[in-house]
Image 1 (cartoon, rainbow, N blue to C red):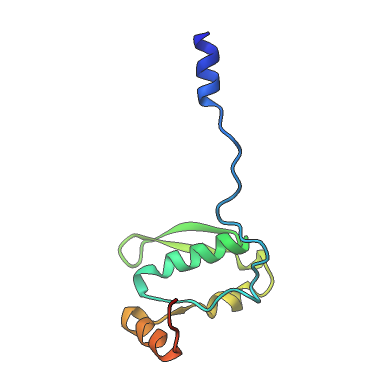
Image 2: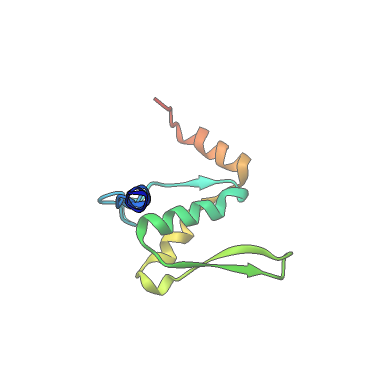
Length: 105
């Protein structure tokens, strides 16, 4: 009885991938602008949503922090797409948002 309750307690229901949004592509991906500190998060989210392979690499030149190496060869056109994700610093991103006329609802 104890073994059965342990097995049932450890059983995990298969959950859908939380990073899948049906119909999202490089063509309809929203324009995104961010601060320097969130640029890795911005690229990571785009990679996850679009299914682009990436890996974490340690950058020893600038103090040993980790960087995201995107495998552009896996998806044609992805190198151009990722160049279009803006990183305008915190102030610049807020100014671009203000100039866009976006009003949250």
